[in-house]
Image 1 (cartoon, helix red, strand yellow):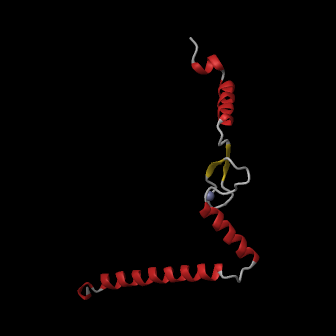
Image 2 (spheres, rainbow, N blue to C red; image 1 turned 180 degrees about the vertical axis):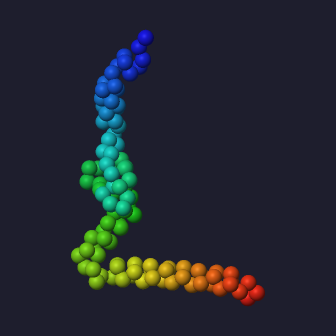
Image 3 (cartoon, helix red, strand yellow; image 1 turned 135 degrees about the vertical axis):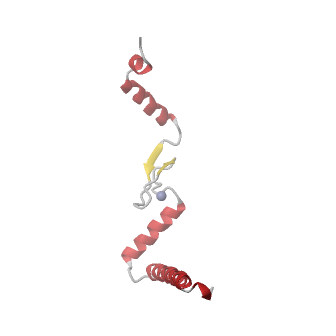
Length: 105
Ligand SMILES: [Zn+2]
């Protein structure tokens, strides 16, 4: 009794699969160049490095930041991050005080 694998051989099946992939027009599978993403994507263009405009923009921002650490991008990001952190802290403090003084609600 022969199984499918025994009949064709595992290597041959892998080879057939690769040939199949290469016959698909979008055969340029590669991971996103953005190190935080690295999602696999397919592109018909060999010069495409990022899976999305979002990743490509993020990478560009990062490059700008490396070139010019005092540039506008990072301070803005930091300010937004600090604002968000403060908001979270405030909310946590409010929750805590509500919990400690249930009559004040
Ligand atoms: Zn990406």
